Length: 238
Image (cartoon, rainbow, N blue to C red; front, side, top):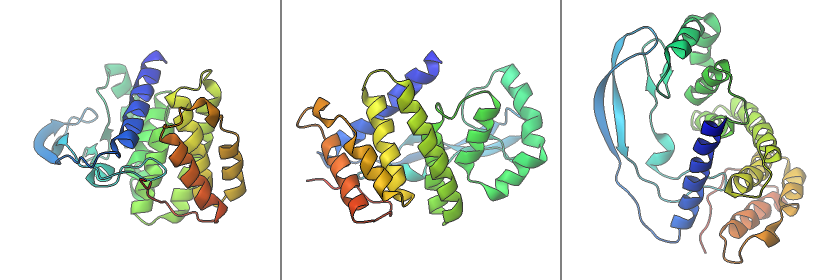
């Protein structure tokens, strides 16, 4: 659990680092390197890419980066296994029959890549609280594929995961703020405008420094919710 929390906190810092970097106009080049890989499950060799760096031009209210950083490729084996980490022998033994199974192979056609990773990580015993960001990423991928019904399914799962995550945190650190704000933004995208506004108005914004950019993030989400606008929307700099 400690390792998962460290990873999650590092991700939160990265996301809010992106928010603060919007003060400047810096962007970064995208570089991809072709690599030869061996699949951990099945041992097949395949060609993939290594991400050297990427570009971002801002972010949305749901903290999705704008630009190539929002569309980075996964490393996926020919058998559909998605390589998302370094695996132990026990993990490979557990995942091998799952990947070969009919349910997972059916998911290759019916679900996004990120959601298949959610499925694999659930199979390894991880909870949705640990997978909240990945479930949200699955919703982003469904959006790109214009699969609205699936996107709404993923958004509901992401909302539940972020609410559970916020409820497990004792202090109002960046991880708590991120989970709480995203829960409200997801509710807005689910057409639950009153629920989104209620969540936002319950946030202890007085705890934030007056110059904290999360104030603007909260204000913009609320503004769209009040107007009854559910569309994914870019964060606007002053």
